[in-house]
Length: 259
Image 1 (cartoon, helix red, strand yellow):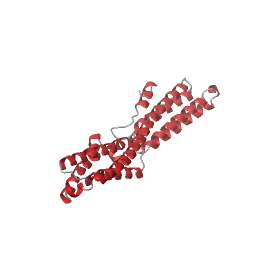
Image 2 (cartoon, rainbow, N blue to C red):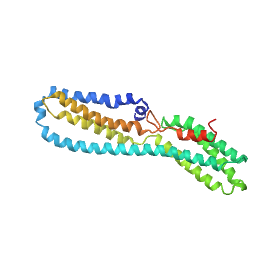
Image 3 (cartoon, rainbow, N blue to C red):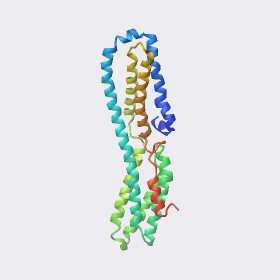
Image 4 (cartoon, helix red, strand yellow):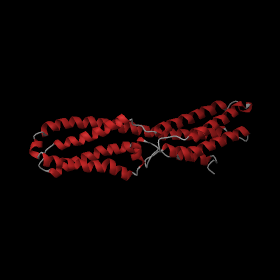
């Protein structure tokens, strides 16, 4: 469900995650006022106010914690792509020269970056990975091994494999994050907490029903906007708010592979 919501345009996701629940929440006080009456509800205002303060703080802490964690993972996804691009650029420089094994390494690097951009990113948008990119990475390692076996390049292999390790590690991080950050149990807790927090306001009684409906609506918007933020960036490579492949594209173009 969260993957589906994160794929939607931001306005449509906001309508489903914020607008629809808020409309339902604002109708809640009207239903209870008609069913029970504000006189009976107002008798609970003092004790309900105390309890609501506790409930609100508990849920606010949970929501803030989830937003911070998801934002940190989103930033990690951006950093992993930047690190991958940096490692790729270093590999190009280490594999400079007209020798056949160096040319093969650069060609393998070109192929890896092209496939990562054209196949990994669409797959990551679905929370998956491309086996073709994994295969191209194996080809890149094979080319690096050929360089290591050439006695003319004794000083290069150690740093070359170090950068390959960094590139592989960065790719593994982005593939892991593409599947989503927040576990299902946390999502269930966040949604249940949001609903219970908003529904709690239905049991306050005021003579001015419109004012109570407005206050409930404002609270609902704030709560569900927090959930919208989490939904939007839970899958860092999906939807309108995503981590793009631009750093890899720049490296590919800078070293001639994009031509």
